Image (cartoon, rainbow, N blue to C red):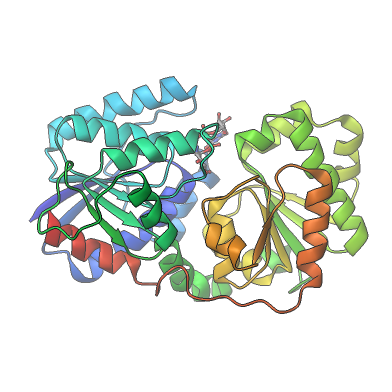
Length: 381
Ligand code: UD1
């Protein structure tokens, strides 16, 4: 029996963890014990606890409760906490998701203690090191033993950084195993789509109809912490609302709420607040966000997760970033990059709304990434 620590900290990681926990419970319980460790990077009820409840994820075995802090302090607190946990628990492996400060800190702690690191969502690159996530993901990949790539582009990115892609009987930090496995979030979107249709009441509560609204999320620090970018994004959204008559539904990250209050010019803030077609909501749970994604006419977002989920549910998307890790979606014409440029956002939204025919080839696997990942972990470690 192998013992694995799975590290979660930020909202999307908690959601991703549910797919893997389900796969372990369904077929690998006799071979693998998973202990979920929450770093506490996200701590608000609707940024954390709600997902454990509605997605049926086992309660975290431990919560480091680090909370919000500067990047250096947050990373350091997690690094120290995970090091102690590893020493106490002596796991056979440690698994991390994505590119957050929790990911990097845990991967560093484990690799220095010679515990194999398993990285899910390996190989993604924005080629923009001004993003904290880009630094986190590059460093994490280079101390990992098993790297699970969601897309063919992610595998190619690793090759370009010097990783050897040959198949290995046993993987190690010096000779890591690299696998294209599809996207674990696709597993989740398929799995929870039906439950969302049964349980989510958000559309009725807000009188939202299919194709009658645009779903928008904004949380990246490059957008929220810069007054000009925040202003450009919200001015564009106001114009899109006025031009199309569609409602704008905005579940807001806590940081975005704070920054809108402190940075957005008061006239624009009042125009948004007085526009009854602007719905500013608290962060949505996973079942609610799926309901919104499935029924939106268009998705406008700076979130990596939402770009993909828009694709899973066959919706066009405008990306509020100058670049993306999910290049296949752009190349296939399902989304457009608009950055935080008011004119580009308005133009891209109109272009995507006017286009009627899209194709959605299976870029993200077959919805069984989690099963593949758990099988490989047991085979290779
Ligand atoms: C983090 C990840 C980002 C991921 C996102 C998902 C890093 C560097 N970034 O960004 O890649 O896309 O999670 O949501 O790890 N806050 C609250 N309550 C919470 C959590 C945060 O109020 O439960 C506020 C605090 O003011 C905090 C700010 O949001 O300072 C930012 O939180 P933080 O965890 O540092 O990063 P995210 O922006 O959430």
